[in-house]
Length: 330
Length: 259
View 1 (spheres, rainbow over the protein chains, first blue to last red):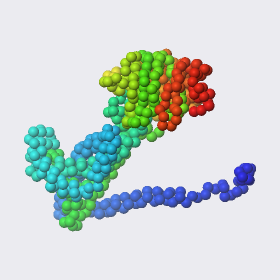
View 2 (view 1 turned 180 degrees about the vertical axis):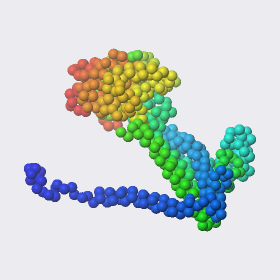
View 3 (view 1 turned 90 degrees about the vertical axis):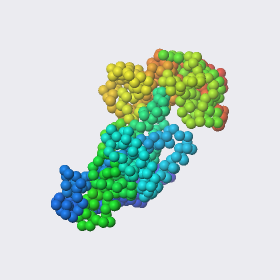
View 4 (view 1 turned 90 degrees about the horizontal axis):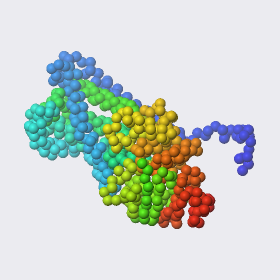
């Protein structure tokens, strides 16, 4: 009781009241979060350094060195390391873009169904099932693609090249096995579907009721409400989800390695027997037999994949930050 | 522009729970009608049935008849979307769309209705609505900036502008000033006085001085106890309700004896 009525100058004399006491919990938490942040940077730097050092011999090798002791270019207009890695980089991006084109609309559709259309009980079950898809190992997807999907899609390949062959992507001679970049993209799409769906669903569910009701009260239909309130609010989240999916598709190794028999070439035709390979699948397939410069070349291709992924993420950040003032964060 | 609302034997449910029981009332056009009553008495719930926003909540439904100039809002084949385009609403907390500019916010409802309005026509409608909401002078130089950058009171007036840009028949206001400071509240109250020349206005308020200041008619809702449905106790001219109410509960409430 007495302490509370002390005059200010008397209180100031109590030295233990003035300096803020260091709080243990705060210190531990600050240390933990700072430590984690630093650790991820160190790990990333270590990976980058490893890739750079081991890739250097391949990057600096002359076209003649590559021709003598490494993988050679299939391109007429570019030889040496870059002529070899360019078709791989193309194949990686091409397969991943194909997967995105298939997976994004479906994922957003499923996520919207779960968040805004389905009855609550069905929505929950569906959510679990989708999350379960993410837990299937990629080898299983590869096996499924090889044994089930590719043979099943043979007829579709022939039909598309016969009747829609005028469309550049579907031109050329249909592959007999169905083991094409088209099939690989479908398998990749199934693999990235759960991650995009789960994230989109979470973001859609976060839409403030206030904004949904605002648009409904203006006489918006459910779909108009989604376009007016849900999508704009979720934009950044959707972009992040897509980028995570793209990252997984770019780096996916086993499934693609099992389905595709790549020829290291650049071709936009998705249904023929001559398919571009992807960086990750090529590393997995070639590594056991590689030596000397070939190893350096494979690691250098890994560096290229690293840079592609980095570029994709920076692009995504830029998209998200472009209209930051309208994000609703203020 | 301004229409008369008539509610007959309206019961309102949340799934099995009956939230409001047997409301019968007439809301006159070109006047302000205030709903007062203690928390949980169903006044907001009843307000939300007037533009069919109640049924947005899963499991919620309405039994009875609500006529807008003789046309049953709950009749078979009536599209709630069309009802909401005729009956505008302003919410308790200002809710401009954060991803839209001030102008886009005002025109948001219009875009749903009439996508073909030309640019100059849109500018005209936006200016008229913002002037109507007493906001034009404050925002005319920053129409393309986000609406979320305005103060709370300005945001609420932006929401009023968004509602009146649709030229509704009725304007519902659910405690429009409860999140605002006294000066912004005064601005909105003045605005309500101006708007009643054109619209039928229904306002829910917890603030009895506000009901006394702005409304022509006051309806008092009450609830017998938790779990019981809310009921309309008494409705009369505001002057009468605040001077000589006929029911004891109304008198107790307005004199501050409970609620």
